[in-house]
Image (tube, rainbow, N blue to C red; front, side, top):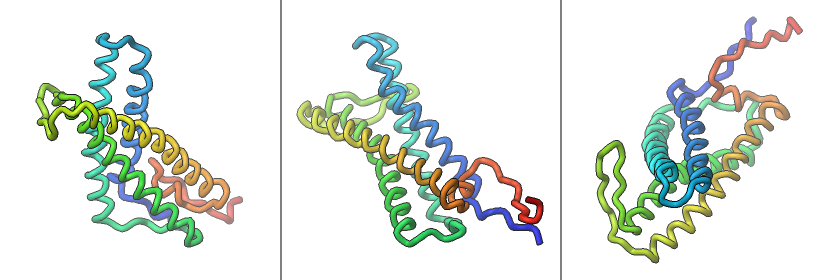
Length: 189
């Protein structure tokens, strides 16, 4: 009897997961690389603009991901991991979603508190709060601390996927893979 392929997330969720990862790499790259350019230079301003645009894109896609995830069924991991691992996975996923939603909001509020209403693709976005330099500075500190936590969370998420795939040898990683793997036929080993 042929083995069934592992249960997988729907294609849309898989695509959004990997697109979000690529966007996060770009968000972090623009943040890190802007320091290469002098303040007030066109390349530095372009990096900042790209950072804002990418952050807003991540924000929008995260809401779409949440909607898709909440409207569907999460495929089970086979074999089922211990309860504590399932609880940790749910906690990390919740914190990652929180980070993906909070960071763009905090970034937007930083700009507003600095007295700026960013423009994206020529469209002026509204000011949500009045200029408040002290608040801008405080929010920048939080934005940076949460960004560092993001490095750790994404790393933990990736390590867990590798652990499940190579140590536990379950299908946790395969549920989110970009391509289907051929079913394993134990009789042909």
